[in-house]
Image 1 (cartoon, rainbow, N blue to C red):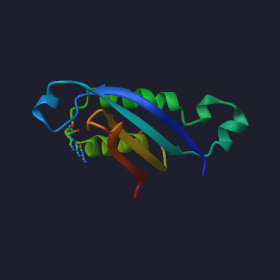
Image 2: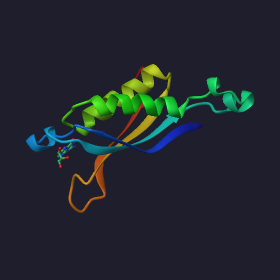
Image 3: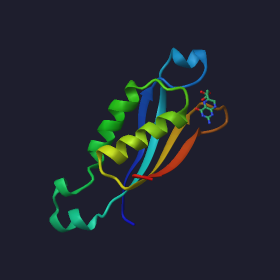
Length: 118
Ligand SMILES: Nc1nc2c(c(=O)[nH]1)N=C([C@H](O)[C@@H](O)CO)CN2
């Protein structure tokens, strides 16, 4: 299966379950893999035939930076729904990392896989 990916997309937002976290902004990092048949844009060499990783990145930056969820699970689910519904993606794997949230860990977070319509 071909994929288009976005790796290490860092976005600052309000996220967390503790009172002190509601008062600050913290960085999150998104890694995203999206199924896409890359033979079509490869044949035409046209951006309109691609799954445009820049357009997906801009949409996620817009959404995540304005969100205010408590759990990373909730935000990951909303991001997956946006990509599946707005960009016609059939399958994705999304990793949402919260660097520095746990002392001693480079990052913590979630990885989800979702299929459109499932
Ligand atoms: N599975 C999760 N565990 C935790 C979350 C979360 O969103 N999902 N959040 C926190 C706190 O907000 C933490 O990140 C603060 O350091 C704790 N556990």
